[in-house]
Amino acid sequence: MLNFQYYNPTNYVFGKGQIEQLTKLVPAGAKILLAYGGGSIFKNGIHKQVTDALEGFEIIEFGGIEPNPHYETLMKAVAVIKEQNIDFILAVGGGSVIDGVKFISGAVHYDGDPAEILRKRILITDTTKVIPFGTVLTLPATGSEMNSGAVVTIAETQEKLAFGGSALFPKFSICDPTVIESLPKRQLENGVVDAYTHVLEQYLTYPHEGYLQDRISEGILQTLIEVGPKVVADPKDYALASNFMWSCTMALNGLIQKGVPNDWATHMIGHELTAMYGIDHARTLAIVGPNLYQALFETKKEKLAQYGRRIFNLTGTDDAVAQEAIAHTVQFFHTMGMDTKLSDYVKDYDNTAAIIVKRFEERGWLGLGERQNVTLDKVKEIVEKSY
Ligand code: NZQ
Ligand code: ZN
Image 1 (cartoon, rainbow, N blue to C red):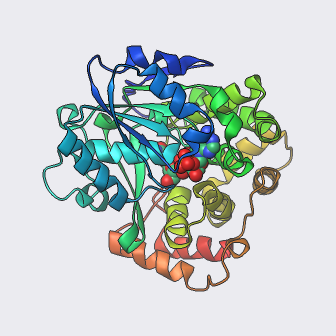
Image 2: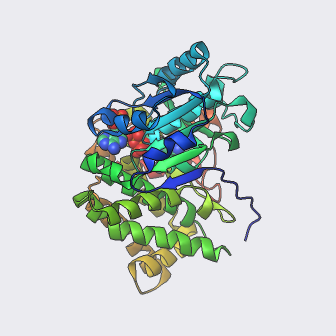
Image 3: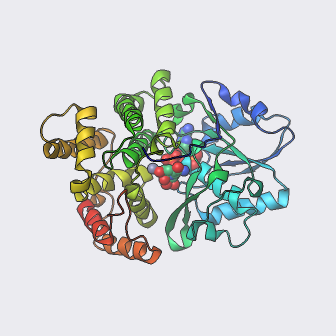
């Protein structure tokens, strides 16, 4: 197994009714920026639950953080924090609001142009230079509630860029599975596929000595296959909702990536499709992932075969099982309501591969993936296979 440090300071507060705990979790006397998205929290009652729980605290509200949050919007929140002397941020939302708050947290005291955090991928590690924040998760999917990474879009240049650092873990995250009752079907489907792909990014690499990491990953995959279609059909079922929510967190809270190789090329290519065409994050993964496994088949096939045998009970040679495992993955994505071709979403896609390759070249991303063998040629091949 590879050496590792596993650091995760987020206080994860799980279960029905736990939003009430806010009053104990937010530092006493803090002046709070309550950050949220497009307003779903007003319709489903979460805003009321949050403000009731925070009675007595001084709260300034900042709404309008869009899906795939924009740098331009977030900089307005940075200005509010400076003007109002805010000392704690509460993110109430899905991955976009939480990621947006991570950026705001790091940008307020950033010494320089905050766009550098994104463009130069500055690691935010000094806890004395961030505004502390907590979250109330409303959409299980990204794991952002228990990790220190985030993705922000610079709308002006259509760039969707990842950043993070150890100072950007939430202080706490309240994860009440009943919040999913108001989620549109599409977002439930997205959540399952995003979390599933997070596991595959950390699992579908090459055989290694992280036996426990593999078994935990396989447990998350099996749980998502078991509860995914059912939770979309019945988000009010608490057993399904709680297993869905916990699986999404466990898929990307750092645990399964420690001591083992990691891929993440599907995400890097997928982010470009969101930046260029506005396709939902999870749906970009369903488009790219299976084609990446095909393009990288020779170097991934041993792990694909393990995945096929252990998750789908397939039998046969490594080659045959690995191929069938990819087909089963596509089938699962279809079951989860995903279209898996770029042409299902976009009419004019002929130049997509060339544009992505150019962007990666400019950023110096010449070899992604667990073996750095997702070269620009491979990126081109993967994107073209996705058409
Ligand atoms: O904005 P509101 O009105 O709240 O509506 C949202 C939004 O339209 C709605 N929604 C959220 N909770 C709801 C609800 N509607 C009804 N009831 C509820 N309880 O859902 C829509 C989508 O929300 P969003 O936050 O964008 O979705 P998600 O959680 O999937 O986050 C996606 C973002 O996270 C990034 C993605 O790239 C994307 O920008 N990711 C973050 C990661 C991380 N920090 O570790 C990892 C991921 O791979 C991902 O890249
Ligand atoms: Zn993702």
